[in-house]
Image (tube, rainbow, N blue to C red; front, side):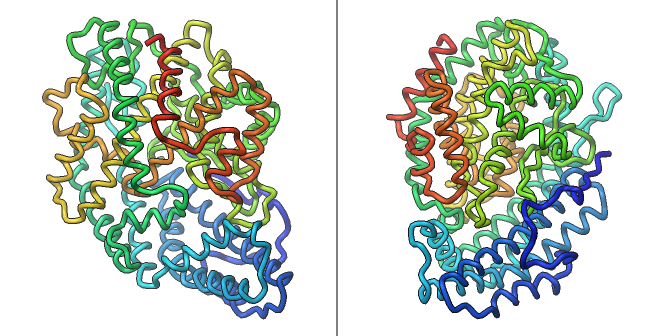
Length: 573
């Protein structure tokens, strides 16, 4: 079992306000520090700026404490002490300090009226604080805690899912590798067993979601919104695009991307000489070649990715190797580990941590590259003193991660020979087409659900199937598998844990593809503007961040069609 010791990770800089030895799982100790900031007398713009620095120091310390508890809990969901500590923080401390955070925001707004700070420097910060103040309602704090605890329950349900496959207990992430096996009957058996295991908990998952949904509706109504979708857009600080822009994305994807996905599937069907594709035919090599096996150990994975990112840019290599040396990677899949992958930042250390479930497949390499892009982003923006400015909007955070995957395409020979390198690259480009459509599928489903707050479980099932067929096409034969098709969305943790956080992947993929286009013509120039944009963190608007990176913040057909045409040419379709 992996145990992480974060005590040896030094802070980025010494504390000047938060005392040593404070226990942030002690509600009274945390509250005392917030109260000190609230009670401080401010008499000048200089004192206000110092006060903001102290607020940022406290925010970073609390955030890092919560991050460590979350990391420990997800690395071993069966560990009773880790679960208890995380729950105590979420149930006792977070609800106590959230209202105080709102009071700090209100104090800042009042003080800035008296002692105005540099309007250009603080514009993004100011509008975000104003929005948070407008959205804050004390009645929502316990409701938000309830949702977070339900999210932990969702994690635990999936983290405990295992199957007995040929006499061996395996996690569901471990089972995914069998979808690349040549033996079709083995793939089908593994697929059905995994789907059955997920379906076994479908009623529990539906119940968790319905409780979340009900609470979120109350949260939105308390804050004066007609639906949770509009509340969440405001909460995500989506100042630069609206739900209508998202729907335009859905329509454009259906018109431009889905036809190419259909061509990809039809070519696969012909290559495999099948009358119909089945769900277990989508990941295997269509020519019957053995599955790509880029590595067998996590050490081989980390060393290979280290070499790749260093070839892209030596600075990336240094950053990745620093994470390895500090023990900030947890990569192997194992029983009790939460599903999925993420990058989390230790805000006081200003260092990233990467979590994933590697099982030895090509997608694991892509996942580590993806999360490394997030990690580099965190490290480039580490010099920013304002805690909130060290976090870019998610739409640009995902540009960082997806660009790293694309920039690595030419260096996958660190894991493969020439033929397998081409296979990996083809699979990656095909997956990009798939993810653009899948994002539209998931996002449109969320819009529908929260626009129709009175829908039933059966309504939800029908709508999911309708949208799935709209964006995934009808070339895959699901005969006899309807129950599994109807609940495919259960495995998309964003729908449960971070609603409406998914369109970002589509927007960002378009940005990453533009960086990929630029890099093929001028790699040094593309990297230079890319790194400049990363270093800005969240101090600029989305259009400004995209412009700094030399790309367009646009997800209309004008931008999407040329990118899709480029991929089609690369795929010879």
